[in-house]
Amino acid sequence: MTNDQRVNRVCNTLCDMGFDVVVLCRRLKSSADLESRRYKIKRFRLLFNKGFLFYACFNLRIFFYMLFHRCDVLLSNDLDTLLGNALASKLKRKKLYYDTHELFTELPELQDSGFKKKVWLWIERRYIHRPIATYTVCNSIANYYNEKYDLDMKVVRNLPISKEIQPYENRENILLYQGALNMGRGIELLIEMMKHFPDYKLYIAGKGYMDAELKKLSAKLNLTDMVVFTGNLHFDELHKLTSRAKIGFSVEQGESLNYKYALPNKVFDYIQAGTPVVCSDFPEMRAVVEGYAVGEIFAGHDAESLAKLVKDMLDNNDKLVEYHRNCIEASKVLNWENEQKILRGIYEGE
Image (cartoon, rainbow, N blue to C red):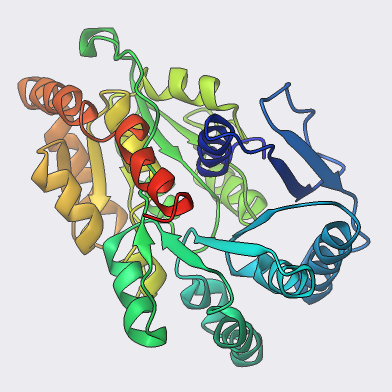
């Protein structure tokens, strides 16, 4: 809950609609204290914090909390919370909604683990029809689920709240990646690329299970002074950092359908900050970046190719300023103020 902007935006919209919202999540030893918000947050301390036992423990806590607390509507965020929510909604005969933030069963982490993937697929097949309404982040994922399970899944994109965009002339020599530090995100390429940009710093804003491995790679390449790991940042701090960057990256790699169909919120965060984008050559991201002419498409798979593309961009300041201006125009359309109308329609039964 420190940095999940989608959950925060959805909760605020539900509050606007008159719901009394309570968010259930976990608390780790390293979890930061949260500022006061419009909705309540219940943070569970769990016996296990990774692997199968974590997911089992978390869903049990969700189920028993729901069992002994009054509620009218349940919202499951992603497949890893669907089991507990589905069982509680059935037992209490309450409405359940399902917001899947990604194509969970096609995550890279599950591709080499047949048993784990089978378990998640079983849960998905067993409970995907329990919600009265389902929605996700882009058309490709919605179409996948609609065809596979005969659903009517809607699309509510990860669009940010409108913000003031700073002039591009004030930008610093910063290249930025924001998001989870997990497999297949292309972060290794970004780090390796930095040996070609001694006058720049790469900021990596986020956390994930590859945190230590990426820091070791940075040290191995003698780039620790050029690569800055910020950890998870509060929404406002992240936007300030994004507004200082010259380019923002979303260069997912690999054959995972989850990445192929991805439309990450960071792409829209870059646009809302007026920051030109470099994204992978995947259909959803390409449609946004090319459609609004806010950056470049990276079709390669190696650090040298990425460095060449970035160098060409940085050497053409007029083009970067043009991308910045296009971001400003795109931000007037690609914002939560517009997108939340779809969310409201889902909960109002339209």
